[in-house]
Length: 308
Ligand SMILES: [Zn+2]
Image (cartoon, rainbow, N blue to C red; front, side, top):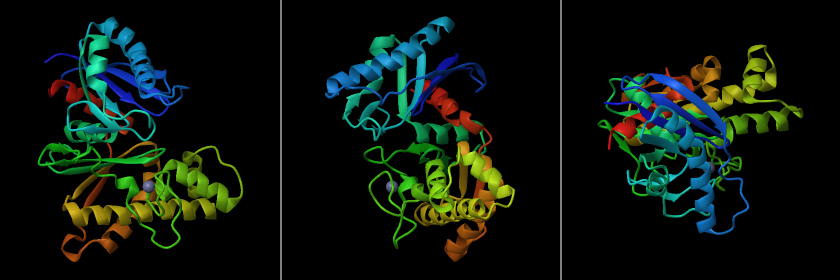
């Protein structure tokens, strides 16, 4: 096995790494690259913009190390492992876009692409807190909430690449908050970084820089920050209980920026989870913080690069 290039494509960042066969990141680069910021109005033009932006970032990095295999986590829904992008919430012009093939032709590299949250699940199972578990639900808590599911050691993406849209499980049926997806009461509208900041601003009537500061305020006894963060944990616990009722998966891992608030989120989450599970599963579900911090996606991308 050889070294591969791993790419983790976020909303505003492109992270690239050289990963060795043992899963060690031996070189890394983080670039600005906002794929959704463009003035194109046709699918063809938007495709060119996306390929140009990605190739412009990846090509110099890969050439530097003379590596010709790329795995990439991308925020969108894919048809199986084909690298065919069915759709992407941030890039509405792109429908049924052969992302992996187009990128492969442009870069002259072997390219594998998978949904970003599913990549994080793959990385966590292979190298992180999910090691040794054939069934795993991995949740990414960041600006939004994503998740990836692995069943019997096989990543499961559903019929349209949309399996485990955990962030959009409805946990508040009465006057729920509006979610970015257009529905009301989704867990993402309560427990993502965006939701915490919005709720803090609304309830406390004051501005706050980021979700990390809300957790810091909560630790210092700020009543409003404590209420919001505790509720985020509770809602996550409720949503996990619903997922477990469907899947009977008892190992859940959590990564992403908000896992920095684990000391607050986990007790609230665990309490609500055990309250809402069906009796035979109470006390049997482990919710673990990622051991890979924000590298789960990169290591999953490296894994799929080798898996073709
Ligand atoms: Zn939603």
